[in-house]
Length: 330
Image 1 (cartoon, rainbow, N blue to C red):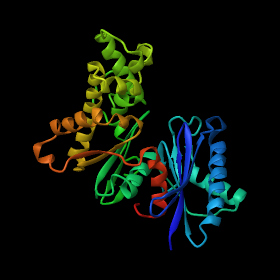
Image 2 (image 1 turned 90 degrees about the vertical axis):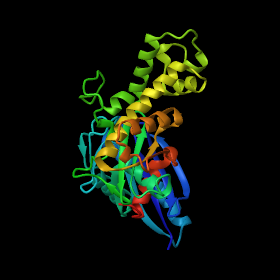
Image 3 (image 1 turned 30 degrees about the vertical axis):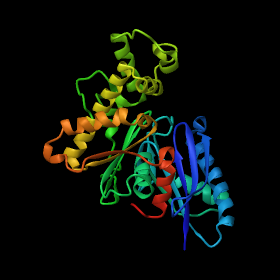
């Protein structure tokens, strides 16, 4: 019997939902602004309302097929066993919240929907998505890294999700690569995220352009002024040959490479799948990252090294949430 599931990706900006079958076909998808101001209870009701609407529609269309449940990826520290989400970034007022239990109760009491519900960290969910339906299908062991506003990660070992003892394994964004540096994120100095999260990349760009004012400034590629720099404008400028923008991306790739080299040395993982919006810069990041991994590891650790782009784009979260419902990877 064929199965289908509802994948939900909760973010500080948007809630994404998709109906996905076991073959990886997206049958429907929605994107809604996250009702951040409504607090945890309001967002739970938002997810429940839209999720039930999609479920109700497809249970009629997919008669004879098995509904495998709802998978939910959320930012922050997730205890998947207890169903608790702790201190999610960009979701003020949550602290420690029993997200799984509350969503189950709302679905049951208000919509009479009782079904399996799985909660995972959003980066772990993205790793599951790539493992089952994306660029990680061919790897037994790999690390998924998401580059965006922040830097997240998920680890797949022997085709299983590795969470660690408290569910925070894979958080490469909090790995310190410059303990004497000036960048600080969440009170920790010199982390990967503080350096190459979105704000870190912009700060790096501003510093480089201020130190070496360009002879010409292209509003088309750079924006109206120095304060207009963004990862997107830096990407455009680099693709048009701006040496300062290329320098920024070389440094971004090097920071990422140092972090990944630590993973190689510690865990002997040699396959890396890189996703998230900033990964759209492609080889501007990938080439210096790969070079830095090799420069920061022993020659004996170089066999089999690969850094590849994620295949699922901004749907990795919903794909992974559905994949968890199918128990393809746990």
